[in-house]
Length: 509
Ligand code: AMP
Image (cartoon, rainbow, N blue to C red; front, side, top):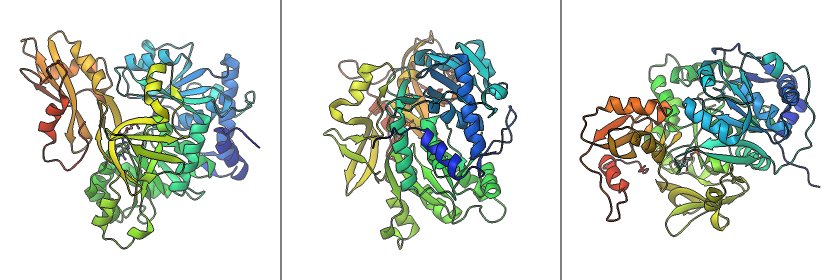
């Protein structure tokens, strides 16, 4: 028998098996009135009514629905209400500048745009056929009173398009199918042993690779979602205590914030011997891994993957053989990206690039056939990361693509260079990632002017008008010239080398 794998499986199961259980506790401190707490029956009802609202608007199967929102119960619902009714959800990074959101809404051809009330300024410039402010359309979208037309389900249909900054000046839309999402959620749940006892604190933005798939996986096992709108170390500890949190995901920067807050926390650390933290986005320093175990008493799990791979490719979790090791030796073992997840094959090519084959690999980039063919050349997904794969474990050692990862979010160097080069007095520019205690890497611009004196503030202000704040340079240095090859190609590795000397971390921009 062949039954299509769709996102509905996760919510249908929870609504059948755990109808009266609390499914989601919304963020209490947000500009729209918080929803719920909702049981799984209510969450399923809200998703059905969102589908009914789309029916009424005449939004057809396959049409795109963009949502720009901080973490919220409304966004969580949309993963099911939109995709589960055969439409395509486009979760957009809420930190982007209006022009960037406008590009994504236009490029994806989104017919509907749902916007967080804090971001209504966006609506001055960004237009879709139907636009709504979240919180003002609850009665229409999330009432739970009506149900949309049922969708027969197609596992090869696109469920979400996730725009990600990569190696091109514009972000690319990663098309994930229901099947990609299903398999990622199931293998993720297996490797981190999710169960109906789990309480997940949403420390990861849900727009980022669909919160790595946790909205689906945790729902499928009947766990509880605790929404967190803004990450703050002490607030994370408070919520862990208040809600009995057992699991969370995040970039190393999130953990650094929690460790800082723990240093001045009054009383025992909440969640000791209970919480597991799943970390990805950049290799966390070994010392951080050790401190999570010794100072917080939380289990550290590292995963590696990309938006393009749904994302789970490898997982590094304490294995039985490591139980008797001392914490610092164990932290070193946990410092690598990990072993292939079930159903993933990893290898490296002659140049050291990490390649992967799996059912979690994207279908294609939205309307970018050349980029898609390149990424999937030879039947392998090309990650753009450099590394080695030995004894079943993958180590990421450098990045072959021109991407900076700051606080877990990708920044395309080319995109920032483009924005800076549009300044009338900037003659040449190179943007590289340099080591940064808090963010892992800091966006750093090296600039040659046309002779007109410029300050770092001038340059940053120019960038802020065009790009999201987190993409704008944190450091700016002025140079007389930039190193180039005989053929005029920028030698970025030379620029980076000065900054990365003596660092124990492997990523060099
Ligand atoms: P994104 O698509 O935004 O999730 O970014 C994916 C990129 O993050 C990968 O290509 C890697 O460069 C980086 N990354 C993710 N997880 C890890 C990890 N565990 N170690 C090193 N780099 C990572």
